[in-house]
Figure 1: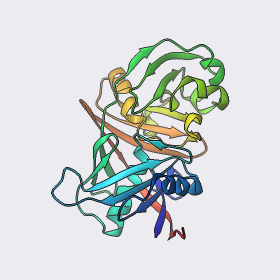
Figure 2: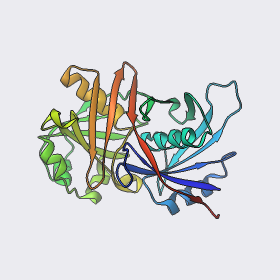
Figure 3: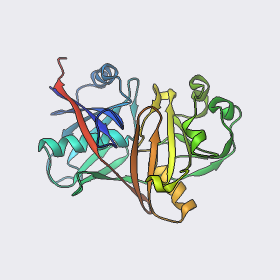
Amino acid sequence: MRIRIVDAFTDRPFSGNPAGVLLLDSFPDDTWLQKVAAEVNLSETAFAHPLPPGGEADWALRWFTPTTEVDMCGHATLATAHVLHSTGAAAGPVRFATRSGVLGAVAEADGSITMDFPTASLTPAPVPAGLAEALGAEILAVHDTPDHIGDLVVELRDEATVRALAPDLTALVAHSSRGVIATALAADPGNGYHFVSRGFFPAVGIAEDPVTGSAHTALAPYWSARLGRDELTGFQGGARTGLVRTRLRGDRTLLTGHAVTVIDGDLHA
């Protein structure tokens, strides 16, 4: 069967966040899906198959890290939508049935794809003991996210602090069911983005996720409230980076980005 590696939230190969994508006729057993994701060894591998016409969704979609299935993944959804549109497997808007409900994806005229995700609610939380030491940085504020996200959103002093992070990943495992998103205002919005972030997910087998779409369903309302505007652009990453355009629409958040296929091959399994 065909397997593709797609760099998401970028228009250039070897940047953004890579995801594996497999289009199937149906889902095999979970053990096989997990083994393929472990073999691909990217932060997420997406598996999708078409659904009968006339339903609330067009494709079923699941996401696996190298160690576990997750409830939501933005960049692998973008990668899957990119594969569907670039191969002609789908035309027009696509609706995915997922563990987080029905998620939409629309191809834009500039080649980007806009996804429709649920907005994550944010709950202020005290700074957990040991978190600042694990990150290696002073923490200004902490917010928790719902179970389908499972991240702590941690505001740091400035962009330079976020970019310089070298956290103790073993220590971070104790602080979140999925991961820790460190964020700060952009040093200069003239650079084309309004806030920065980095995401660390050792609890699900990912040291650092370069560009985490699902995290932006929490970052969008967080920074939109602070900046007084509903449309923002986030810059995320350490060694690899990418841009996520966000539009807050009440209980839904629109995430827009480009994607590019870098590997298209056959899976012999």
